[in-house]
Image (cartoon, rainbow, N blue to C red; front, side, top):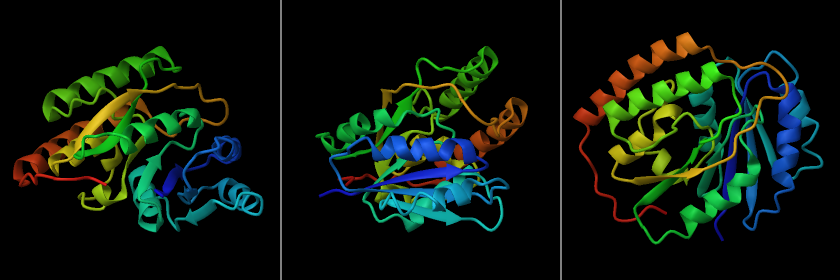
Length: 239
């Protein structure tokens, strides 16, 4: 039976990580699963709070970076240590709803499209400030124009994909925002499913709008170059 590895990068999410883990455990997933929290050298009690739950949550694993390395590095670390064939990624702030996971997993596993490698979440109705919603729409529009990845919301942390597809991708900082384009570059296919989105209830966001805009422009140029220089590989199956 397919095993699922739920990989959650966390940086200073001490208040959010416990409730999020509890939500996942109570999903009653029909597949065996593990929850991998990657603590990106948090300065709060994120690591300690996860460790305190390990005795009661047998599926829980915790990995801690020595130095703060960013969200993409945390996701890559979690996937490196994952034992499941299927990867679920989600943010550690609780804004992604774990209740969306079963539907996304089913869409990938039950698909008759053998080239389908990823199901990406689409936050059609976001519970965020107007400024964040507008800036996200602009960023997605610019990215879509240059990369033609046909994915309306690559910034959504909730994604389901095969581990085998990820490990073939080139790694770089911020790559998590370009996973659909990178998978397509390797010949895989991606679909988007609408998911719910929740307001951040505790803690503060780790991202600013202007700094994300600048690095986003640089990254789009880089990914465009990668696509230009990469030889497209035709995938027969993705499982």
